[in-house]
Image 1 (tube, rainbow, N blue to C red):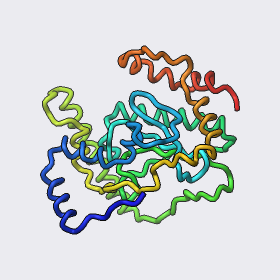
Image 2: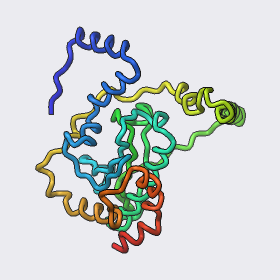
Image 3: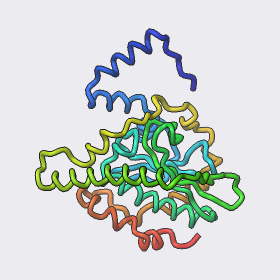
Image 4: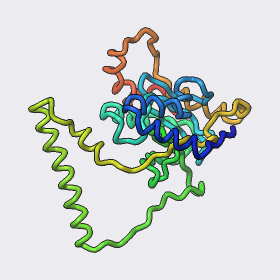
Length: 260
């Protein structure tokens, strides 16, 4: 799908409009521009393997390996510091669940669970997500990290900077518990993040219906492995939240998906 290029005048006008937006208006604008928000709302087709009230897991249409899963929060967040603690905890529980399902259903030997947080870290989408990538020996994917040498003085300097910031956040947290009107540790942490996120989504993420047959078997396998046992359609939101940790426990997973 080709995107129409903006003229320089249109781009300046858009930048000025964005600059004058309130935080709520800016968030709504980002959601309208985000292809993954359109996938979550059902406006764009995807191969869904898991869904609950907080997140959606789909197959990447341009996978690093077969079975590459994108785990998306349903609310639009650009980077991880924006995601509330309870939501990030839930997302990683589900990442563990779909990783286990992939291990049991796809005949793989491991998984990489990756977050690309900011452009410098390789983030290309403007919607925060967790990648779950199935792995086999000799699959050609290389995540080997370089080992750089640092002096003791440099290491000590970095250690002190991190300890100072973490201690400051902990102090704010303790004060906020005593006096609720004070700024929360999350807001204090968020204010320090200045790295950029992508402004628009690559076109290749849009699903093409004609590819349905090529990955249907893997989709079915993952759906069977991840789908909770005896789901209740009438379950209330409150009971859903209270049972979320039970639904994704390893024991429940093992019972649901059995063996390969």
